[in-house]
Image (tube, rainbow, N blue to C red; front, side, top):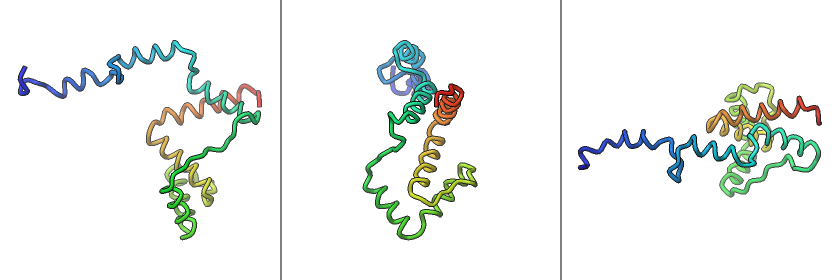
Length: 137
């Protein structure tokens, strides 16, 4: 087959549902479901329970010189609250207190998750609901 006869788009369509090891995504998902890994919603509900019991910290930590400098600059220049308000607006959270570093970071992470994969946010909500309905808090 010459390069002229090669239909690149057809090849991409044919293989787009494969995982990096060549298996079809459905096959990989079934194999993953067969192991002991809990569903995301269940894992989130368990995490809420562990946080509530004090077994797991509710803090998240990240190290990044560039972000640390950016946020320090935002704080020193008085612009942090502006970024927080804009982030709250994107998420339609008018009542959000968005003038601390922690609050702004929370909002920005939520925006990133929403932009990346809304199903993760939905799973978080479902896991929280599952935790609250369990009455174990």
